[in-house]
Length: 200
Image (tube, rainbow, N blue to C red):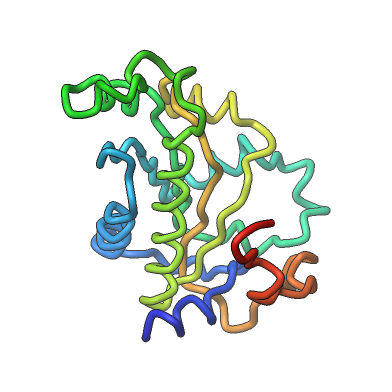
């Protein structure tokens, strides 16, 4: 697809086939995501990729069986891959402590950063991954981990300083997609509602 077509046709997928996704496909998506912008080329993000029984454990941590009966998007649980993007603040402090960046003062600690570029860069990478998945015919859904994060982090042995942005379900979309989220009904802003020329 042309890039404009990828952007315009991409949607969050909430219903997946349980057909597995080859590891080489996941690797190619991550390779593209790694090319997203990164402050100082720090590339301070990590992706924990869950497949097989690890996916079932993820849902046990974040969506207990007692809550699944009322869960609207039951076919989301069929996604064969859950990827967890983590941002690493310490990587940015370390990178900006090096001679070519030391003059910025950002190497003195996390609190020196007026904007958390680890969050921004990881978000860039996630968006690139979502587009890459769509381009090869996969469906993907980025969603928040509202419940069970402590249990999840403990089980996966994730270092405490890493920031979890959310979760990405990846897989082959079902032909008959389940209903879209309520937010999909909201109108998309037009460019002239977003652009401010010269001043606010």
